[in-house]
Figure 1 (tube, rainbow, N blue to C red):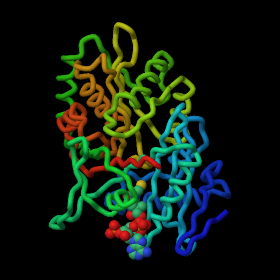
Figure 2: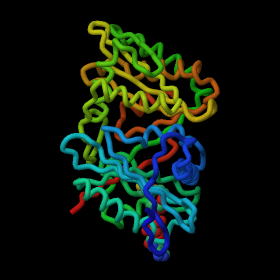
Figure 3: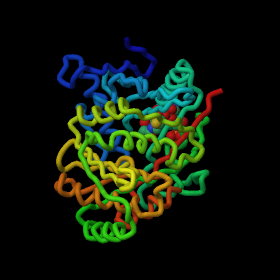
Figure 4: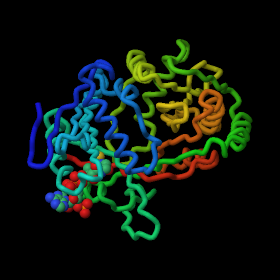
Length: 364
Ligand SMILES: CC(C)(COP(=O)(O)OP(=O)(O)OC[C@H]1O[C@@H](n2cnc3c(N)ncnc32)[C@H](O)[C@@H]1OP(=O)(O)O)[C@@H](O)C(=O)NCCC(=O)NCCS
C-alpha cells in the first residue's frame, strides 16, 4: 500500500526474511538512505551500517513494536520514519525518528510525516513522544544561536532540526555528547589508567567474553543490563524500567550474533558473590576498519567508588585492540551531566565530536 500526498509518498517498510530475499529491495534502500543521511549530518561514516547488521533489529520481537516507513519523492527513496513502541508494562512512551536527505528538506515533508508519527503513537495508546537528533556544529565563522539544556549541562546549535522540534511543540530535555577516541594515540594512557584502577579495585576481578554471555554470569549480567534503564541520567525524559530476564538476554544476543557483529563484554566480577557488578560493551562495525561503537557502560550503585568504570573501560579497549586491530576509532554517547563517565572518557582520550538533543512532547 502506498499513501500519497502532493509532494511525497510513504510506504510501510517490508522487513524481509533475509537481505537476499526477493522482497529485500526496500529494506536495502532504507539502509542506504540512512547511511547517506548520517554522512550528511556527521561528515563521516562512523555510524554506517549494512542491511545485514540492521535487519535483526527490525524483526518483530516481544520487547518493542517497531513501525517503519520509507519516504519516496519521484519514486526515489529519500528518507525514513520509525515509531518504536516499547513493550514495558504501563509505558506511555513512543520513540520516533524522521530522517530525510538534505535535498528534500525544507518543503514541508517532515511536518507532514510528523502527523504520521503522532497518529501512530496515539493509536498505540502512547502520549509521550521522545526523539534524539544530532545537531552538528556550524562551519567556523558562522554565527548561530545556541539552546541550553534544561539540566544546565551542554548546549546545541539552534539548527533546522531544533527549529523543527520547537515549532511542533517539543522541548529540549537533555544534551548528550558524542565522543570519539583515536585508539592509536591513546593506548599508553589506557594502560596507565588500567593499572591505576586495578590498584583501587581489590575484591573485584575482570572477566571478558565475546557474546554470548557465559552461563555463570547470565543472571547477574541481565540484571546489570536492566539497570541501564534506571541508573543512567535521564533528565526530564520519561524512561520505562526495563525488565531483563534470560529470554530477553537471548534475544539481545541473537540480534548481534545474527548480524555477524562481534561484541566484547568486559565485566567486573565481585569476588565475594561471583556476580557481574559492572560491565562495558564494544561492538564491531561492518568492516574490520569500521569505527567501533562503545555501547552500554554501567557500575551498579552499591559497587561505585572502586574505579570499576575506569577499570572495565580500559581493559575493554586494550582487549579490543587485539580483537579488531584495524579499527582505529571508537565512538560513544554520554549525557553531558554524567560527569563521572565523562571524566573517565576524557582521561582516556575521548574528545567531543558532536552534541545530541533529546526531545520530548506530551500529546494532548
Ligand atoms: C528535521 C527534519 C526531519 C525536518 O524535515 P523537513 O521536511 O526539512 O521539515 P519542514 O520542511 O517541515 O520544515 C523545515 C523548514 O522548511 C520550511 N518549510 C516548510 N514547508 C515549506 C514550504 N512549503 N516551502 C518553503 N519552506 C518550507 C520550514 O519553515 C522550515 O524552515 P527552517 O528550517 O528555517 O525552520 C529534516 O530536516 C531531517 O531529516 N533532518 C535530519 C535528521 C534529523 O535531524 N531528524 C530529526 C527528527 S528525528
